[in-house]
Amino acid sequence: MKNYLLPAIAVLFSSCKETKKTDGSGSSEEAVTQTDTLKLPPPDEKSSKNKFSNVIGWPKDKAPTAPEGFTVTRFAEGIKSPRNMIQGENGDIFVVFCNSERSTADKIKNDISGKSDAEVGGKSANRIILYRDANKDGIPETSSVFLTNLNQPYGMLIIKDKFYVANTDGLYVYPYKAGDTKITQPGKKIVDLPAGGYNNHWTRNLIANKDQSKIYISVGSGSNVGENGMEYEVRRANILEVNPNGSGEKIYAAGLRNPVGMSWNPTTGQLWTVVNERDELGDELVPDYLTSVKPDAFYGWPYAYFGKNEDPRRKGEKPDLVAKTIVPDVPLGSHTASLGLTFYTGTQFPEQYKNGAFIGQHGSWNRSSLVGYQVAFVPFKNGKASGPYQPFLTGFIANEAKGDVYGRPVGVLQIADGSLLVADDVSGIVWRVAHTKK
Image 1 (cartoon, rainbow, N blue to C red):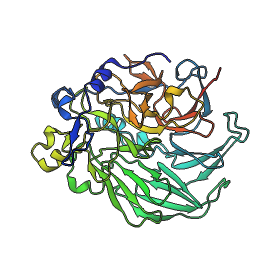
Image 2 (cartoon, rainbow, N blue to C red; image 1 turned 135 degrees about the horizontal axis):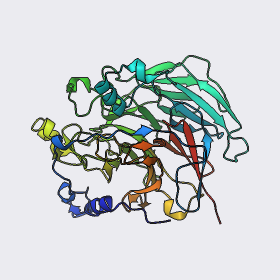
Image 3 (spheres, helix red, strand yellow; image 1 turned 180 degrees about the vertical axis):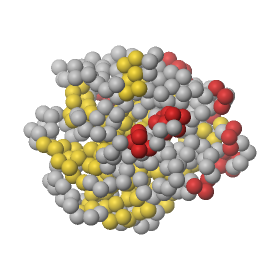
Image 4 (cartoon, rainbow, N blue to C red; image 1 turned 30 degrees about the vertical axis):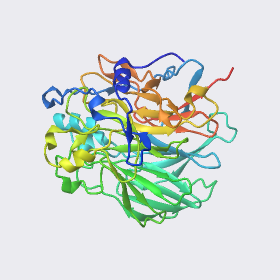
């Protein structure tokens, strides 16, 4: 594979050195990266710039670019806003479609133009489609509408004979058995989730622990930096933990502005997430990040960012929370809109990808030039990131000067055969990335 490392991020990552600390017993452990080693520019609200992308769609003869030895094909196309995916034990692929809530960039553009939601939103998808590739050739033979009448769905989860869906306003559970091609029975809402008002980050993702005794729900903030009042952010900017019946809710981790992708580290068994960080502090602030999620930990939002760097818009408000803010593990570039996450545990890809993290970066709007618009990869060794993020699936930007893009990747999913599926929501395509073994 070619060395696609981004120079600026390589410098940023290398400056985040690990230190040792020793407790009273004389034993030592690796400390979290120290904030004073991370070279971030000063925040500057006046320097904030916007550059919106213009989606032109993929020509029939064109596809994203992967490293040498990989092929990229269309697993599904001609669909509306595919965003997230899971695979059932029998191999069925479930793809959630939702475009009822405009993106932040669309909101800003249309607030400026004066257009209404109805003028720009179109008809919502709000459904789950099932794809079945029975002969496992990478091309589904059948597809069917699996579930409808949803409210901005994103997260999906199968636990035994239950199919869970995280709508923006709640966690729902439906009866299910492997092989079902459609759910017709009504679901039961088992957890109410905050979704009122502006509801900027509407996605609610789901993941279960190994023994399926707990479900984790990601809930993003309703705003950029709590500017509408923190009373509207209750239970938001968190990862929640509940029992499979919806009881026993607790905040597992807090201060995560928009934690969308979640995945289990295959080496340590620890929960990791990617976080879409805040805007309007300049081109290089604030880095999105990939991080391990420590129980009961606080990650800064909205009072601090990337450690104890105080946000000037919330200065002096919560010094106790600023002081306890944890530094995330891996910076992913500012405004990249890092949303999708999966750790690679298959055997199809070359060894350097084993146990590493693939990240869907939806792409920037609050920056003077486009960044993101790719699937990135972070190498791991012994359960820890062993280098900065690097582009893996690229070519989504058609013309940076004009802001033209072919598509915007979101969800990433490793499926049973070891290939990778990538949901490209604005182009209506699910891409399949496979490695051709020699």
